[in-house]
Length: 155
Image 1 (cartoon, one colour):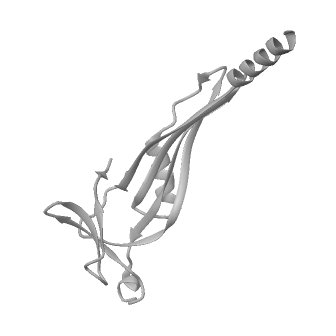
Image 2 (tube, rainbow, N blue to C red):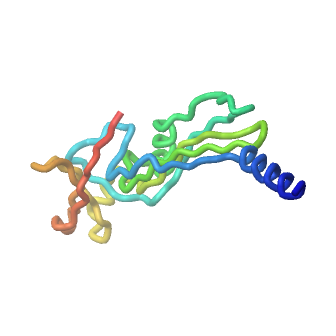
Image 3 (cartoon, helix red, strand yellow):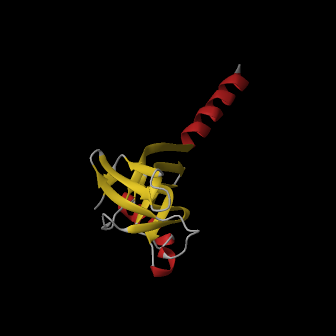
């Protein structure tokens, strides 16, 4: 009987000591913390991920992570202006004395097309347009190809 109580106590303490949680905040069609030109020509750079985190000591936070900073870092990694197909997540963990809370942002970074991009027929450029049902990214090579913007978030 003592072994069962000891095993249960060790298991309960292990769970309490090694705690953590991760939450998906949301999925965004387009998100930016920068001014985005409606009518501007853009090209997709690549998919990037960035985060902003703050430490916790004895479960006391030493700051608050910023979602804006995480989005800024992700956009800046690709030298872009906005993200499409963005996923925002929040997580925290702690072990006895130390822990961390953070925001993670992952998305496709888009940048403005330059003059050489405009004359390259092999590059798929998009124009951000305001339509009757909201905003959309419309392909300049194939106007049927569109990315509908369900949420346009700008700060």
